Length: 390
Image (cartoon, rainbow, N blue to C red):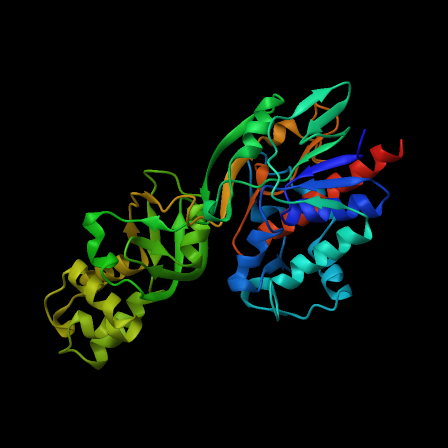
């Protein structure tokens, strides 16, 4: 036995799990095929890393088992990670909706995690291919090294240009763990030719309430040359399936605003009224789509109600998503049915753990997925340390 635990993946979850297990006395090795640790951390949050969210609650996560994340999230909270950030004297600021960012650079979070790993005597080997994983006599064998505990922290296939792959699922299946079908999440949606007018106003954004089924988010939407993006769209994309409608309310209180416009400028046309409520290019597209030809003064309440519905229930049927290349995270993954919610250990394979994005737990946009990485890492690290002491 060379180590107490081998951790596959030098991302956020893998590094924190290694640091905590190492500081608790475990001999830990981290392996990653990348040439640098924490690559996804470095590009996150526009380079400033949205490292957690003050509003983190289990309801902010998707999973086939919506209760699975509760244990880990309650035992290593956003406040625990923030305390670590502050202990390293990393200055931070809060943006909208509880999102916490570094004042400086995401590199500070990577440096913090590496410093914590060094405190725990963790060995990190980069540019190392995992290859075949052996398992015999209670030991896992990887890249010529052995340990009684193995942690899958390799993430999902989102952002493949950073070297992301679906290797976590291959490893899980190798050990008999089920995998919930992975799919891109927090991802822009594409629109077809029938909505080309909206694609032609690429770059226009406005605050909206976006809805898919019974799920709504009130943030900004962005029209792109391929379809829809922006925070509100990324949020609902995690709940979207092919065939689902995406409904936008682009003008709350539209009916009252239109009635007021009719009173103030009865000779104006719809485009002029909408330009008071929305970006001009969007107002032009919507006025053409709604098709109200007469002056506002000659428009009935019933006609204004129809116009209002076109603004408060603007409906699209996306043709798809922009895929893993543009997805911030991967939904689905290693089934939570195979794992202990308190330790992240596989129920039927003692010593095997899965944490972070590799698991079927997906957070909202805004630091929630990082918090899941930290919380699940801490859960696994505690179990690793306890087993190492036996």
